[in-house]
Each structure stands twice: as C-alpha cells, then as structure tokens.
Image (cartoon, rainbow, N blue to C red; front, side):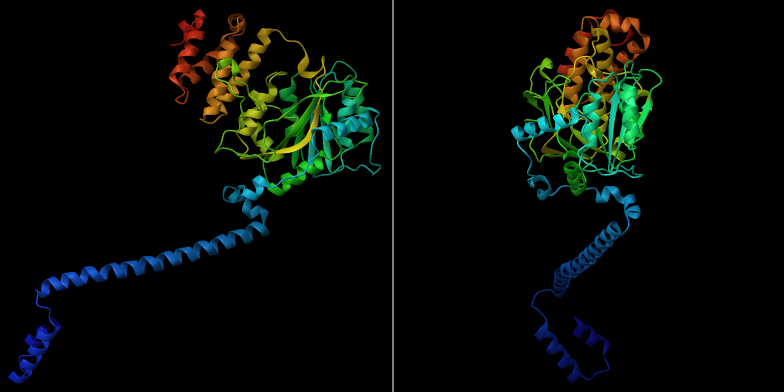
Length: 472
C-alpha cells in the first residue's frame, strides 16, 4: 500500500522506475484484497498494545500498594497516636498461629487444688508479698467489685486480688448502700492499701449500675469484673491473662471458672461445675462479623439458654467497656437490676468489641452464697421486669443473626408465658409501654420467621389490652 501511494505521487519518474516500483509492489502484496489485510493487521496488533499497557499499569499500581503498606506499617510502629486514626485498617485479625497456639495451663484437678490452698491463705487474711504497695497513675488492671451486704465474703475477694503477682493494679469497690458492716470493712482495707478506691451510692441502685459506674471510673488498661462473694482462683490469674491479651490484642479474653459450694470458714470440698466445658481453649470469635452469643442446643422455646453471660470470668479492655456503656446510655445502665444484669452487660459488650478469645485457664472461683448480691429473693413480677429490660437491650444491641433471633424469641416467649405478666404490666405504665414497644419491634423484624411471629402473637392474645392497643 505504501509503495502504491508512492507510485501515484511520484508521477515525474520515468517509465522504467515506475515499472520497478510496480514489480516490487506485486511481490510483497498478498493475492487477496489489501483492504482486508489492513483490517486484519489492525485487529491483530491492538491486543498486544492493550496487554502491554494493562500489564504496565498493574505493575505500577502494585508497587504503589506495596510502598504504601510499608509506610503505614512504619507509622504504626513509630507512632500510636497517628495510627489510631486507622484502627479499622490495623485491627488485629488472627492468623492460624493466633488461633491454634497452645497455652499450657493446669488441668481441672490441679486448678482445684490450687484454689483450696489459695482460699486458705485469703481466708486467713494473709498477704503473700511483702513489697511496698504503691498506687499507679496508669495501672495495668482495674478490678471492679460491686458491694452489697457482703461482710462475710468480701475479705477473701479483696485478698485474692491483693495477692496477685502483679502490683500494678487498682481495686474499685462500689458500695451499693449496704446496710451491714461491709463499708467499714472495706474502709479498713483502704487504710492499708492506697490502690483501693471506694464509690458510695446514695441509695440502692443494683448491680448493673454499680458495676457500670465502677467501670467508668477505671484507669487500667484492662477491667476484671468480680462479684463480692467470688474470688480469684490463684495468684497468677492477672499476669497470665493480661500477658496473652497484650500478645494477641483481643478486646475480650474469656477464661474458665470453677463453681464451688463452701461456707464462710471452710475450704471447698468439691467443684460441682466447670464453666465453658464445651468451649475450645483457643477459640477465637469476632464481632461484628460473627455474633458472640453461644447458646446451648435446643429445638423448643423453653430449651434456648444463653450460655456465655458471666462477667466474672472475663478480661475486657477498659476503652471497649467504657465505649459500650456510653453507647448503651445512662438510662439503661441506671435501671435497678440485681438479677440478669450480666446478660445486659454481656450483650452490649459483645456488640461493641470486635474480637474475643477463650482460654483454658481456670481463673475464678465462683462461690454462690445465699443471702448476698443476686441471690436475694424476688417475686415473679420483679423477675418479669428484669427480663423485659434484658429484652429491650438485646433488641437494640444485637446483629441480624440467627443467634440473636433465637435469643429474642426465647426471651419474649418466656415473658409472655408468665401468669403474672398481666398484673405486672397493669401496675406500671412505664413497664407496660416498654413491653408493647419491644413486642412491636420484634414482630417487625425481618430476620425473625413468620412461624416464630405467629407463636408470639398467640401468646400475646391471651392478654386482652395487648390486642386492643396494638395490631397483632
């Protein structure tokens, strides 16, 4: 084609030269139409150029990403303040090493033997360490204990914390308007240990409020909640748990607990239950990707039980705990609750934290003591109100998951089948409006099946004023 155009333009050449160009043109030109050849060459060459261009672009982008990643990691190591703005990017996600590395802990029997020896020391009021006790401005651990009429049990609880093999801690005691000698006992402790802080409620507010304001006052990196009738199982709990929490950077670290029946002046004879028997020692869970609400197996409403609701067997990052309390609001954590309060706090803690790890370490000796704390007697109407408070929080602070659906269906059907519910609602207008509001929200939820909704309606229809005040 080039030579043909050349021939046309160079008409001034003599005939011999024109013939020479023409002959050469015939030799290099295919027999088929040259226009088709033009299209064919164009299509053949274009992919090559496009591929080279894409490859170069991809290589350039990859280099930029790698350099950016390196720079971000350098910033992460050099300045925590700068990297805090990118917490979502650098949030710890576990590798197989994190999930499956094996910590070596004492077995159940050895842990129980350690508990008996440690309990003996704490009951006698002994301090293992003779080191000078000094308060810290930025302690590693904040132990938070709500108190109510616990004069028989508070000694062993506080001593079990003081005898930990780390001294960088604070002990926050929230006196919930006790009517016995509990306050005078802890004030005596405070004189000998400046790490103890006492907060006094002006009236009885319940465990939920008391533990919450104790957590809001905490300055440690980690919070270890504890009941006033329980104690730590040995002197190595805080050191072991916080070391793993630091290593893995998990928001919550759960550990095992023993439950034993003892009197105030005797050693435990046996452990009748070990919590988290079914949990894997190195199990890692995430939020919000997964719902952190392990339930016991069951196919009927009455067989749904929330399994992981305790706080005295957890280590929680202080900033996560305080963030959860601010999110749930003072109106909710100020409600008077002394039973099921663990369920409420576990709910909004698990929906604020992004990661949780279970350990095989036995850390707490749970000692059910009649007459103290949540073991005081309540009539069924009071229990209905507490169950409703739990339902209200679960509705607003759970994800749209199968597990949260099971919890809500269980809670609302459990409340509806109580014979005293009608009387409870008629006696308190606020509780009545709260119950109707919760019921409407549940019936509008898309992830709750129509079968479950129909079951809820059938139970609600037994109360006349529920049918008249809302469209069921």
